[in-house]
Image (tube, rainbow, N blue to C red):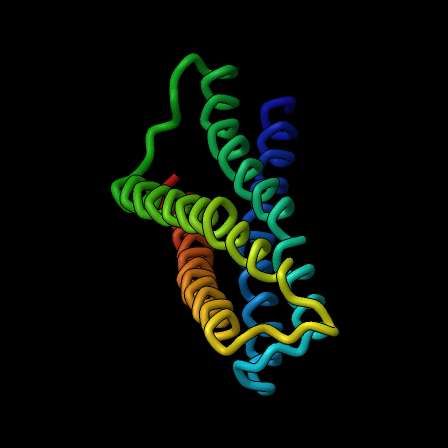
Length: 175
């Protein structure tokens, strides 16, 4: 009974983290697409809201990915704790696990690029802008080019998150 309760709590947290990993890039993508209707021209107040929202999601993404890893490791350890061995998985489940891990590591890598490289550069560039001081054409172009790169990476992250969700469905195959 205790094993099932622990497994259920870990699985619940794992699924919430999976949904969070997919929701963040999905909603960020919608925000960026809505912002794009105004074109690559800086509107300080609007772009401040966009940057604050996108960059404010970073801690949540980090918590979701850490939760995903911890609970993903916790489930087989829970089985080991109660049975003295790891659960035997079918070939389909093993392939799904490998693909799921590849995409989770891909998401973590993308997050690293965005959070450690792109967002700090965007912050630095944006700090030179204000509602009273419009950027020169080159600074504005560089800003939107970097934003476009972040958008492409977020779209890849969204695809990876959906694939993680899909492959998670096959984890219980044959058990």
